Length: 277
Image (cartoon, rainbow, N blue to C red):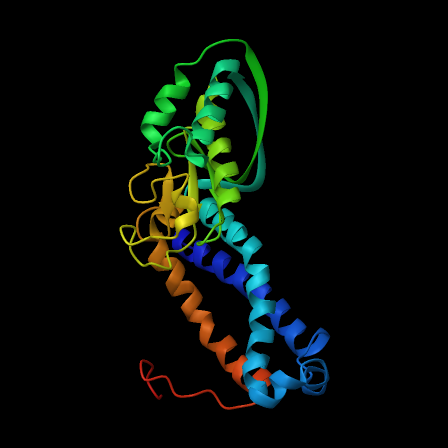
């Protein structure tokens, strides 16, 4: 079996496990019960078809588990691509005291206006250069990264903080501080650390305009930001993102049809982009 086949099988296994759990919950352990919905929300039930709320019921049971699945998928891709991946990996090192103080200074400037009329705009390279000029006593620091990966061919180590495509401000602030600490350790325990989003709802990096992470990162230019295809290709090599999409699409139709028939109680519509036979 080739590496690409191993990666495809691993990706599909993670997706199948999640979808089987979602289907079991939506159909068996926590189904949509129209009578319960009518009793709890009589006004909504009088105005809006049950099918709308039935769809929302399924969506909630689908979206919630995906937060953890992204990390599992990233680990599988790293194992097949770079050579090694791990979820929730602990990294320990030391950071000089003045560097820690400067991190707080940089983050406070990004968060508050201070004497300026506007907040300082994020600039990763300038911020890190300023932080690394700090000296002082060595302070022990421990970081638990979402996904850790090792490029076994080139002996390189990476840490990824993997967040939802539309992260909130607090998550982004905490993540930036963690990445600062990873780059400030002496000796460095990783060769690269990144703020990663699994896909881009704005399609292109240039168009990404969700405001909350933009307070902390220049989402278009900061080198530590990886969005969608950049992230997956970093883990698995060029073309990994397209292989990932292909692997999911290969098993997607089965689950779509099951949802139509078993959950919605209707025949799936014919998809014009698929052959009829």
